[in-house]
Each structure stands twice: as structure tokens, then as C-alpha cells.
Length: 308
Image (cartoon, rainbow, N blue to C red; front, side, top):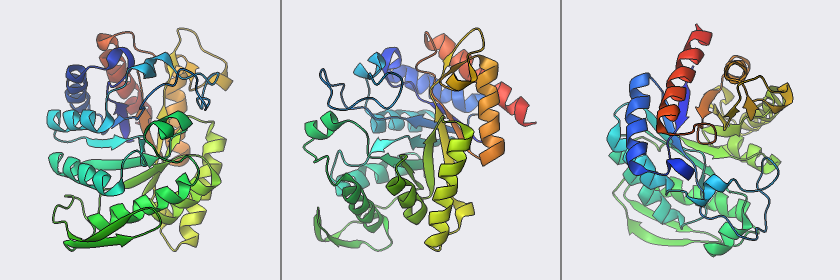
């Protein structure tokens, strides 16, 4: 069982010192990976509905630290755990610049980076960074092309595309991990699931009902087979952002809400049914740093016992 934990990054937990403390402690507890998310802003009059709850963006997202900076903090505070993003918006910066930053982070962490990318959901964020909302799928495809070209063996790179033209250039800085850091993609559309199967190393899922996840995961694997790739080599990471309750919640609300036992039961089922890796985000349920660490320890212990 591979268990990951979200690094303190937003809301009341937006504190770099706490991010370092939790990262160190999570590694000591035995967590396998640490993760960040990506939120640029919360629009006062949003053009897009938040994809969860009642459609309102959580108030905690109004204070959100930069994901790659926080991953760097975690990298310097740890030595073993994997470090990932679930998910970094791939289109907020030009791909050559993104490649340099990710390459540097992979080197800082001595090859522990998992690159989790997505397209986001907020039209306001796209507007703020000057990136068109339309055509973002094609823009992501080309972003992946540029990343792979920069990361490939050989110091001479070049790219000519619809969105970006990179002149023949010498780039000797390469990631520690070869041929590149693992690439995971998030999203739930048919086009996204097909893209994961065609060219990613795994899918960043979410805490949906297991039958729904199973069907989507089957779709990803089918696309991998059609592309001549090995579906068994793909990874599935399921992220949950639970609010823990003293009493059991209706099953329809799990894992978004529920008791400690219900959450452990859901996560165990996801692992047994799908072979998934887990990512637990405690920002919405922990009241303070002490509770964050206590819950992290208790959940890790309970999940390990359930797996035995």
C-alpha cells in the first residue's frame, strides 16, 4: 500500500515552516509520498463553478502558497519520500520555463519528483495569466511535447509547433530520472482519459465511488493498449479531501464526509479493488498543526493495519 499526504500549503496551514515540519514528520511516520496542489486565485465574481460541493470555491483557497516552492521546501526537509503535484496547472507558464523548473526540482530532490499536471477548471485563472481557455487540450499536448524534448537525451533541442517555437539550442541540464520524471495527468473528460493512456505514466483520480473510478480506469487502460503501451505499467493515484465527522455519515457522502472508520474503509477498498496509490489531504478537516500531524499518524497506522 502506497500512502501519500498533502503538504500544508493553503488556508490556515499556509506556512512554509509547517510545510517543512510536516514533511519531515510524515517521512518519519512512514508515508511514501508528499503532494501539493495548485490554486492561483479565487475570483470575486467567478466565471466557473468549483467542481465540488455546492460549486463555491472553498474559502481556504484564498490563501495558497506556490506549489513548486513548497515542494522544494519538502525536498530539502526529506530524503526518501516521493514528491508530487496533484495537479499543477500545466499551462500557466511556457513549457520551456516549466521544464527548467521541474528539472531543477528533480535535481534538488535527487530524483524523487512525480510531475502531476492538469488543465484546471477556472476560466478566471486562465484570464489572469493571459492563456486562452479555448484550445487548452491541444495546448497541453504541445506542452508535453516540449517537456519531453527538453528532457530527452542529447544537449541540442529544438521545437516547432502551433503554440511555441524553440530555436535550436543547447540545454545540458537534465533531470536525474531518466528518460524523464514520471508524468501523471489529472482530469475526468474522455479526452483526458485517452491522453493518459496514450502518453502518461499514470492518472490522478479523486475520491469518487469505486465503480465510477473502476470504469474510468478501465478506459485509461484500454487507450494504453490501443497505443501499444503496457497498461500494467500505469499508476493510479486517488486523492481524497475528507471532512471527518464524529458519527458515520450517509454512504453517499463518503469519502467527502464521514467518520474515521468510513474513510479508512473507503481507502482500503480503493487499494484492494484498483491497486491505487493514496493521497490524503487533511486541510479541510484538521483544526490546527497538532491535529494535522495526529490525524496523519493515526490514518497511516490504521491503513497499514488494514492492509496486513
